[in-house]
Structure formats: structure tokens, C-alpha cells
Image (cartoon, rainbow, N blue to C red; front, side, top):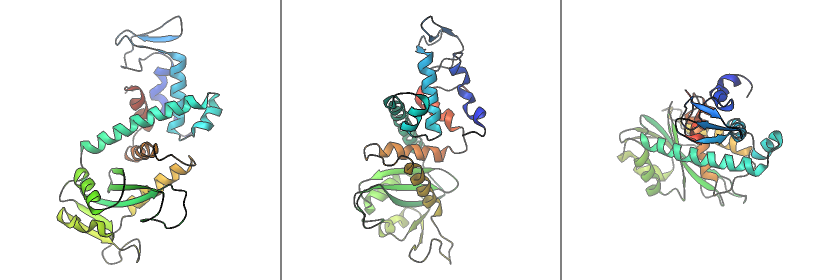
Length: 263
């Protein structure tokens, strides 16, 4: 990212220069003879060279640079890049889950399932083999929440809906029969995708959540394949990017990785 890079990465300037403690934000830091930055407030210390390298890697993560390419650009062992990426994705995963549970979605909510990955060719959508199933809930003009599920039975879908949304909301879905009991929980509008993406009479649609699936698959395509074990962490990273799209994402990633970021 070139445009506005100074503004985006400006929050890391004091860290890179060794003027601010990366753990507590204190300006009471000293440089030691062995090249460490030591905080006089929290008493923690960290190698300045290692700190600069980690922040450079976080910049690559923010810009969605694959680990192997960033390793080449920085002249660093690819395993080092992968470890930082994995640590940050794990932190983002837990933060995104806490955010999702902190406040329930409400208002107009679009629901849909998507299918990711899988090497076997054949049926697409429901019934496709070898794919990860993801259930998504999108609050129009708001947040999205995603969850990897084993199957899309009515009981499974309703359990997640009741956990993550407020009763009495307005729900928009396709004509999948797994959503039939949703009318007991709030207003339920459907769109028949066999006839079109938008209902001509009622104007009902789920284009918002469908757009999120396209956004997610576009990002995942750059990685040329993600293991099923790590897939939930990649998915939560994309969810976090979407939910905080109007904020400084790099500052968010710094906070997740180090636990603190300067204002």
C-alpha cells in the first residue's frame, strides 16, 4: 500500500525508533549496550533489531503479502515469517470471537452458507465433497460473523442464530429449508435464487453476505491453498478486516500482536 502509508504505519514510528515501550506504551525507555530497549515502567525489554523485524513482518501481513514472498523481500527465513503470521492470526481469531460474543447482531441480518476449498470436482454448493462449510451472518451496514460448521442442519443453524443475534430481528435468507423455523425467532424474508438474486416483487436479497463470500475467496486465492486446520484462523482474519474496514487495520494488528499500540 503506497497511498497514505505514512498515516497507516505512523503508529509504529516510536516503536521502531526505540522511543516507546511496545508492551505498555511508556516513554520511559532506555537503550542497553546489547541493543535492547528496556522499559523503566513495566521493566520488560526487547531486542530493537527483533522488534523492527517483527513490525516489518506485520506490515507485510497488513498488506496481505504471502509469507514466502515477504521472506524473499526481507531476506529472512520463511519459517520466521510463518511463525509471526501464525501467532498474529491466532490472536486475531480470539479477538474476533470475543467481539462477536460481546454484542449480538440486530436489525436487518442476512444469513447464508459458503463452501471453501476441496480438491474433488463435482457438485457445487450444498452437497459438495471435501469442502469446509462456513455459516455467515451479516448485519446490514454493520458487522459480519462467521463460523466453520460440520453441517447445515436446521438445529445447527438455529443454535448459532440464537447465540449471535437478537430475537425479533429481520432475517433474510435463501429458500433453503434449514431456515424454515426462523420465523419463530423474528421476521423472515426469503429470496429464491433459482429465479434471481433479487426478488422482483419484494426486493429481498442477500447480496451483502454474498459479497462478503467473494471478498473472502479473493483474499484466500492469494495463498494458493490453506489447510483445514488453519482455515478458521484465516477466516477470522478476513472477518476482522471486513468489520474494521473503516479503521486503521495496521494499528489493530499491532494491538493484537503486542497487546498495546500508541494512540
